[in-house]
Length: 252
Length: 253
Image 1 (cartoon, rainbow over the protein chains, first blue to last red):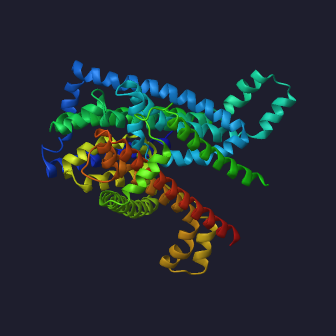
Image 2: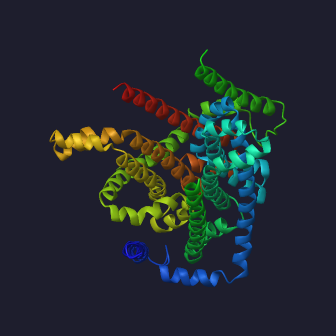
């Protein structure tokens, strides 16, 4: 115990120094660029806290969250099903993997007009765009999780004469779970990114729209405040998923 | 036929088959021409566009921006990665930041960058740089972490000067990870720049796609989309081949 305390203290101290440095850079940008380009940290927090009390903000936040929730559910379901299928069909998996990696690195934003032409303006286009961003990493992580299952595990379950269901629930699921959670974490971030980009390009609702609209109206206050809220949400959600992720990897 | 050739051939067949399917669906108007034009038409449209100045201006602008952002992010990412590798305490403090870096939807900063730097190429370079640098930092750290102890010890026994040790021991040992960093930095610079152009800008390939979309000019739009996808695929393919070649050489050495 006595050994653990000093390191914890220095960790907290380092974190505080980092946060202070970040705020200093932000304040410095503000001093350099002025009110027309960015608001200071203090005004931003102040404005953000009054913004979250308005009904208007919540209609936009709700639009984003709804699109994000649909997109995330579809990404996870589709990603896991395809990942499992490609993982167990070794040949199909080997054929598909480089194609998926290539799809992962293309600038998917250029496909957005196509999505808009198929789905029209509205929530379904945003959902589709979120899905094409989020689904590929989930497929890839699931595929690799299945591919890397230790064959000994499968053989021993056969020796113990487990039923298919028992094999899945007591052997396979726990074996792939840690990697699967990592995939979901990465997919979560990218789905959010996709939905927000979609809103920034062609949308009349949502937080992405508020951000881009603030710039078009020269209302930097709202842009900076919404960015702060979105980034805090993303970091917080990722932090929770990361903690869960680490625990899964430890216990596995 | 070995398994690898079978896989390769099947992969080509799958890709060619999907393109042929889309072509057929477009030709038969099952996919409305208002939604998508046939891939063959995209290619002819692209071919015609190569005859005009407009597309070359866009290409020059986009690629010079990507190149600048790539070079800057690789240099900064490598330098910073090497620096914090030498400073464990700084690294420990930055660790949570690096772990959650890519969960931040960076493109939300892009409008702010326009407000800060104006509507020119600087915000594009910055967004590409910000998006790509962390990948290079992480890859550099991974690479330096995995330099085998025995190699650094041998360098010391051979009394190599620090510069010589870095050049002929550390860098080659870390090379595969550094290469991954280069690959990611290039892909991320490309994505960052194109996305920025697409959201709000005054030129470049991304801008022209968005412009054609708003103009209902699906010929130009699909030709450019096709072009961007082809460039991305060719770039990734070339780097992949180069990487395999390098790994094979290392395995032999």
